[in-house]
Image (cartoon, rainbow, N blue to C red; front, top):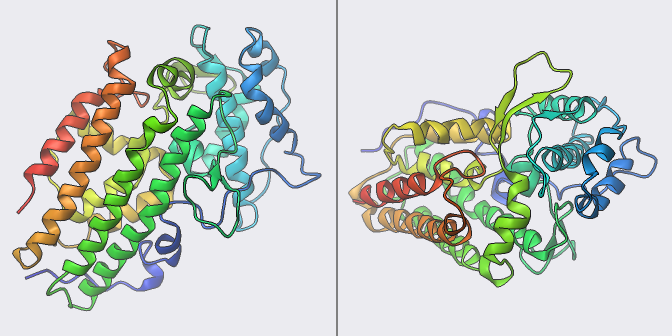
Length: 376
């Protein structure tokens, strides 16, 4: 028998907020693509547009150290949050470009004029001061047709490191996958309501909805090679999303920092599904890395994952077929992800660390094996 959830109101629940059923983990409204005319931050748009060309210049760091970036001063509100996210995207890209400029040795210090704006914005967003998955993907897209879907063919990026469309495509594949996750979160919210109402005799229909959405995500993930060359990915724009290792933030009263770079492991989709399915990933250095990745997720997404973790275990023979189908869809996603990691990263390097600093191939294999082992 499924254990009933403790009493909780809809107002207290992050999962039951309607934005997740409509948008998944994407922002409540489409990201802001440019600051309003007359905004003190508007100069960042021009710098952002020029960044892909500026990075061809060996003197980029000299240029970047001379930039005057206004400090974010606005209180956070429904109106200013989209602007703060765009500010974080612009300065986050600048900081990662400075530290990891291709063709140069990684920088060991981030100048005060970049470090302080980034740290200030990151503190307000309750996250570490480095460009992460949220800034690289969740807040970094726009629609061509505003009434069209958030899907490949109708979306483009706002900010990039390189001119190549390969980078656009890499980001946009993730954006569509995130948009599809709305169907997953809608189904999980329905499961929670059933549990709250002690009406969980058979969750098969909800689990089949999750499985169907995940299959759509797998189909999108398989499209990566359509517009992304593996060598170009590894040589041109992957270095820019690499972790920061022993980097001093000038003006900060702290020792040199190590922050994880942008990685799909910072997406909230799979951790939410692991939490729902109660997959018992064996505690290891790798799973500790995975838990640490949550620091780089938006705070509300972390709260949602914790809420799903607190839900009762729904693993039951009453809906065995549907439950196993979800696990198999998760495994299928992990298998494709594993194959792309092999093709786009592992074949080009002996370094076992991914952009987030983790031994990615070993970690991905462990996650896959333990997902498959949890079936009924």
